[in-house]
Image (cartoon, rainbow, N blue to C red):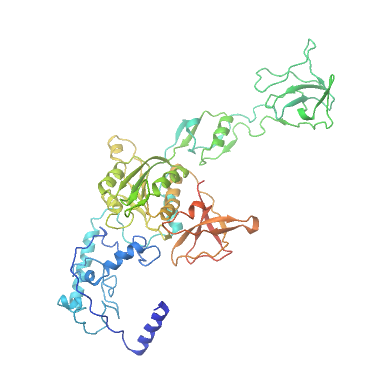
Length: 562
């Protein structure tokens, strides 16, 4: 039966005053000990989407949902273990017309679990007592909780999460380093010229330095011999040229006083004792005047720019041997999950690790200095030790951000008294991502050093969802630590319809097509949370708002860091 048919039937039943037929009696099942999915009493729902257990991509959690909603689990007793029954609201009150399979006010079917417990499905006194007991238990459990478990509140939108990550950190302390060590760092101060560029008038071409309109005679020494040509790097001051004289000159050589232009070799013709040309050069031709590019003290580059090879060249030309620069943030990658294989083909229910090979170079492209990638599996003690003792500025974990039976990240953060800055984001894929601030390293405190704040970015375990976490949280956080300014936002036009999530932003791999006014972005296939085929060939990620986008709609795009 389709959803519309069910709706029509429900409306017809409500209008007729009848009720649905009673379901068959629920079978009595042997009670088993339930898996504890979360240490937190209010972490219920999907690891992918706490508020939408039936959303796309939640098949794994749908299994857990089915187990939790089984009648045997709803009969867990007044202590409140397990999920609430389908007929109860969040505060424990019964929903009108709901219940655990019985009609409102109707008798309990024979064999129903409620009769097996020796009570009716709904007793106001017992219900009130259970609700009060659950409320007191939750209140007592919430009091001693660490900062890593904040009050349950709706996760931020995608733009809000990016803004939080951008403002979470300040730039690392600047260091003065030799030019050869400055690549990839960030300028901590404006780059000002220490000399004029060029520092003297120079020749832009190989040819003849000439004086006057021509033809010209080669300049001669006092003994009558022809003067040698002027080379780049000649330390002696070149003699002055008289009107009508010419002297050979190389590119980059100093221009002799009295020179009016440089005549290129290919345009010059020497006939006997004369140098002639069919097209006399205009005054100043192929001469680079002193200070053409900059004068001493001019600001060449502003602070906050990445030191690229071109920046190193400009700094050297402007007279620098060292630069004051913000270091690259140091990052450490922790790959979690016993189901991962790190070589060979998938087998026996295990899959290849796609995140270990991807995350480290992605962080490097974002400007981080990755010190190590560790393969920890689902070892809670190893995870605790790695996070507690790291000296990296940023720890990036893959997987374990939800509340499954082997997801230890949230409990580790609570044990370490970390402060959650972002706990879930309204974005698809990747909404279980998180960002936390860790305390200073104990060794730094004991040594009396200035404590440096450390951060942890928790990426979901699905590959494309992890990529979403990198661009949403890791990229802006690393920019802030490196002291860099964010890229200017830009938009592109959709060339095809892109479906959207009802409430969440979608990040969709796209390719650019066409040029000029016909330029469009085309969404790629294979863009599911566990897929990398689409993003491996994409040019950018389109930021699709809730509800989707029609062809011709302009949407923001996030360029990849290469």
